[in-house]
Image 1: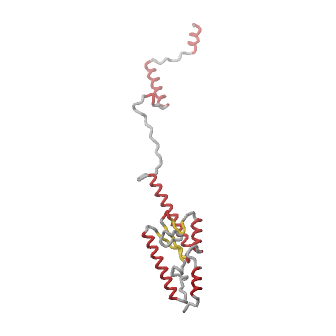
Image 2: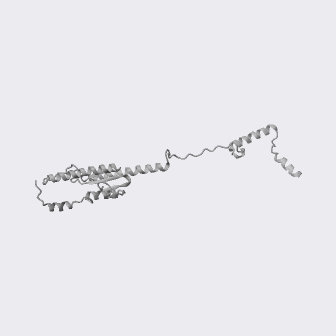
Image 3: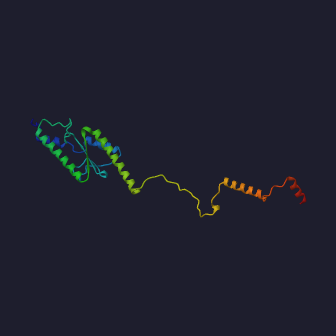
Length: 211
């Protein structure tokens, strides 16, 4: 079916089609920013000018419309009018997308594509991946600060032992041991008659009168 729109009018219509800041792209940016992640927009120095760029993680994200980048879902319907034109245009878009992603991979970047028809699922998957990447990065930083082979363990208290070279008086003797030693000394004194027994009360009074 021929295209009934004049070439000048068709050019004006195509010029109004946004290549950036589309509604799906804005939804992704708001959700990711709300989750606490920061990014760069449309870096022209990278192949394909990715919609969102996470330099720390070397991650480039494209938010694609299902028709313009031909996802193959129900939104990817080829117009009946001027079909040859649209088929060639869509084919060029798909080939360009593939080439740009290949170039990014060669430069050491990872690429992710969020499709318009699966916007919510794509946003959730991206946020989950970013959170996992941040956690792995923090774990590596902690291991680097501790050094290789270091482990976190509970502190052990030193065992106190008496020094054999210290004098005997430096080591306190338990009270029970002292009482036992005193009883042994008293018993030995009783047997030898050396222990002085207490004098009766009347003898002490007599001694005081004599004084």
